[in-house]
Length: 175
Image (cartoon, rainbow, N blue to C red; front, side, top):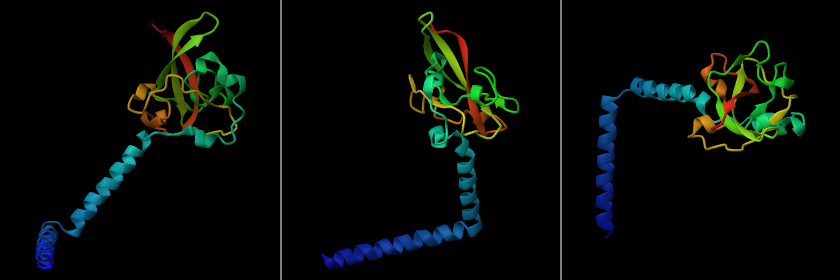
């Protein structure tokens, strides 16, 4: 049995060495470095679309209180623009609204109707950690349902990718 294993391992060693030498003849170090560099650059290019958890930046955020309980904020995840120089529906000066967004269906307690709310990140200014941070995940779906997933840096489609705050815009009645 030992001789059989020795022959098997010796044959495996010869085959591995032949394959490695053949690969070395076909592909030089430059080829390897080019492929490795391409993989690294490709990985960096994908980084902005990876999930982005803003809760980590919320350590110094003000208490959530009543502001996060406002009906339009039923699926919000971020810092409120109304506390960062903007309004409930508009970005602060010097920032731009994200080109993409996520949506939520929120019930207005005044008329008991469901409304479609678009949450847009405001991009291009530094984060102000002392503004109110809200995380409401009602109706949130996993990352593969991107339009319903709020743990993403939605500034990824903008030229200025830095996240600043989030606005809640009522789109209309949900039907």
